[in-house]
Amino acid sequence: MNMLELNNVEVAYFGKIPLLRGISLKVDDGQIVAILGGNGAGKSITLKAVSGLIHNELDHFTFSGSIEYDGHQIHNKLPEVIVRMGIIQVMEGHKVLDDLTVNDNLLIGAHTCSGKKEVRKRLDLVHGYFPELMELQQKRAGYLSGGEQQMLVIARAMMTRPKIMLLDEISFGLAPLLIRRIFEIVKRINFESRTSILLAEQNVKAAFSICHFVYLITNGKVVLEGPAERLKHDERIKQLYLGLSKSNKGNATP
Image 1: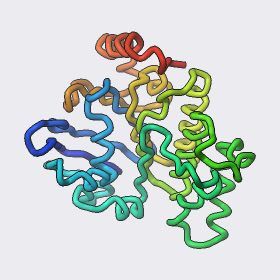
Image 2: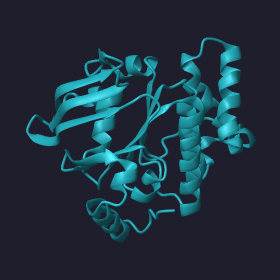
Image 3: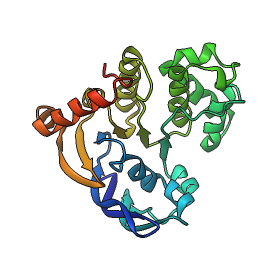
Image 4: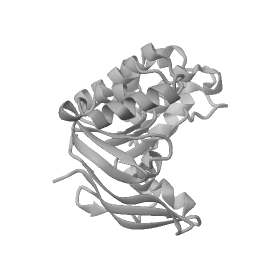
């Protein structure tokens, strides 16, 4: 059974301006799947459709199609329900709770844990992936560097015991060495915790370094899909990569 599947998903702004035009994709159990595309291609809104965050904007968006998770329809469920089912989204832009400490940010992600023993176990787990956060436990999150904040939001998502993590532009604004390290950690999380990943990225080289399957979207439509090993040599991917390299010099590839 496919763990997550989108079937002909269409989203329109005010019901008139199409943002997604029949998106169909799937994430099998244990996979890292990348959605590649430029700004405005529809990557973020695809993740919001899966996580249910699009419901926060229902006054402006219309939705059609279906989204299934382990055989259950989830496109009409609220975000908090979807989180409890094991799907958590890491938003673009290092969205920490600035005035809270690093530890308090992590504990907010522990709301799905059943008791103190499990919370401690989850904290030990995320500190194993991100040892810096242990040293920064009492520091206010708003004073962290961009890289530290990115580590924190991924760690906070891990505190929810996710079965699927939706990662939105996690390379954004980071230096090449830090991008490489964070992507290596995501790959470890996938392998060691068997957490499936749906990754929306402009950084094509970083995405290909860890993903199993790729969807390239343009103007809200899937224009190319296939296994990463095959598509990383495709000329259309290379053209996208080169175009992004020229227009996003501040978001360098590792």
